[in-house]
Figure 1 (tube, helix red, strand yellow):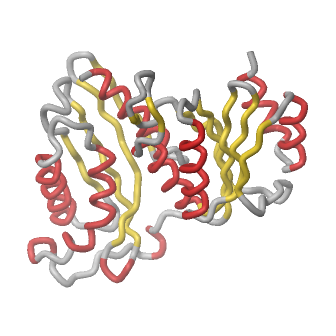
Figure 2 (cartoon, helix red, strand yellow; figure 1 turned 90 degrees about the horizontal axis):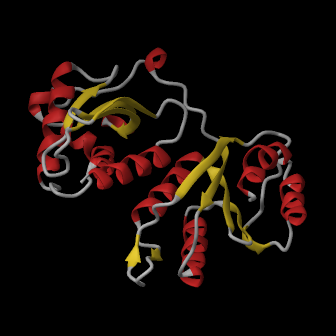
Figure 3 (cartoon, one colour; figure 1 turned 180 degrees about the vertical axis):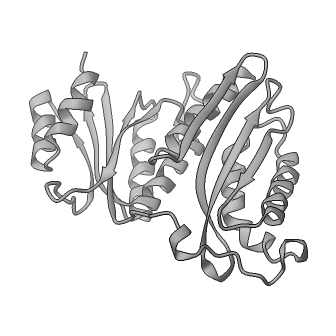
Length: 268
């Protein structure tokens, strides 16, 4: 079970990788792990409601329910309590499997329905006053990912290309020997959705040829696209014969510093 939890925490850290979105609050061999996720969900009147979700994974998790604390500057205590109660009921249907990401996705999709219930205020709309809304810096973002390997390379590449196309992301899937990098540009929410797909889909095969999820992906870098960065017009798969050739790709895109700080260290 400890291995399942480690894999889940690694996946969550990769998915909720924006500034302040993810924080481990405590780890203990006897008390388990406590961490915080900051996210948003659609409330009444299509308003985005910021949520702070604190999860406590006991040592017996996922055979037992996680502890959950829900807070939001835009919800009343009764509404936060209702969200917590509903999340715990949903968690009961997911016992024995890692469930935190499923719970976060579920509340993102269902918060507005919970807020319609009479015990939460019914038709009273949960909205943040303008001063209370967190600043959201959307726009065009860039993310660099590192993959450890691809066993089913042809299928894997086709899947990555499809995800990039469906999510309107541009960039590069880059191969240099054993080094595999994915450079994505696009809407930040779409990049997050890509990471969710990458972490939760059976996109590769294990050593026995059985379909498996991606466990060895790392987010090396994420930032908003700056004026000096070139915007890619499409998503392309490219193989490089030398480190110099790969470096030129980054330099052409205005990403020299990104190459020197994160890519060179991967070369053995």
